Image (cartoon, rainbow, N blue to C red; front, side, top):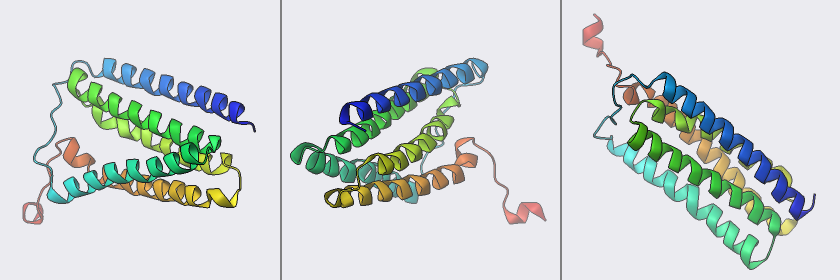
Length: 177
């Protein structure tokens, strides 16, 4: 597949995903428009602050270094295409989270990562398959695998936080007996 074909294919695929994700968020927001405004459960646990900061750092620095070195410096267009769309969709997720939390102010904010993260898994896997099997791109493939594992672990941690995000009360063992 040529560089132009990869870019066009990824543009259309990501556009379709973004339109479907946004439509879904709009429809769910409409369905939940009469719920009380959503507020984040504060304060965040110390371990969660560390994890969240680590994810932000690991989600940006390794792919950015790979994109700058292999994509810009050494001019591999497939690296630019794959990681460029990775950053664009990551940015769209952040914008969606900001809008749903600050503007819509309902619980639809909680579901935004559950829409975007599975797609990110697909993006990273697809990036591995779209890159040519050149030995000079081996480190880029390592970065993609690392990112895929990191995002899957992040997804599991996000799921474990659902009771906290939905303000579900947890009974202690002494309350059960």
